[in-house]
Image (tube, rainbow, N blue to C red; front, side, top):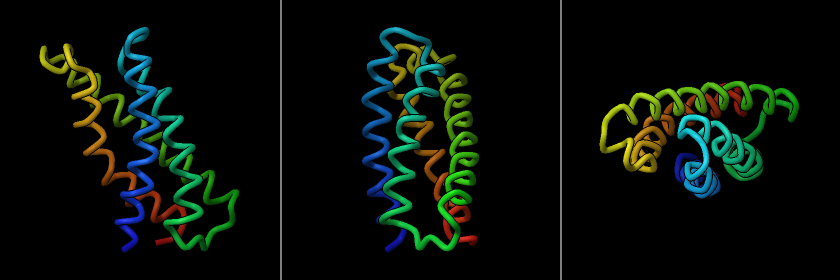
Length: 121
């Protein structure tokens, strides 16, 4: 059940992320747009996951710092994947498709690291 809740919170955070990414890609380089948009999604996810997904056994400051550090890793991993993917013509023409692929990969990284950040597991 926890992964379903994580998926649901991720869909909401990802919605924030994707909307901002689509807007920013009109003005700035896609990997840079991802850093900004994923940061906004990260904050959304932290609030939802702390409140509704994980049984927080760590203090708020500790879980926030761990979550933040792991999220930064996920943001840079996703940005790097987008950078690699937009070297391919299709993804260069449709950066949102690169974002979808990168997000799918980073989802699994995020689940494992957030589980540790909140639950010490």
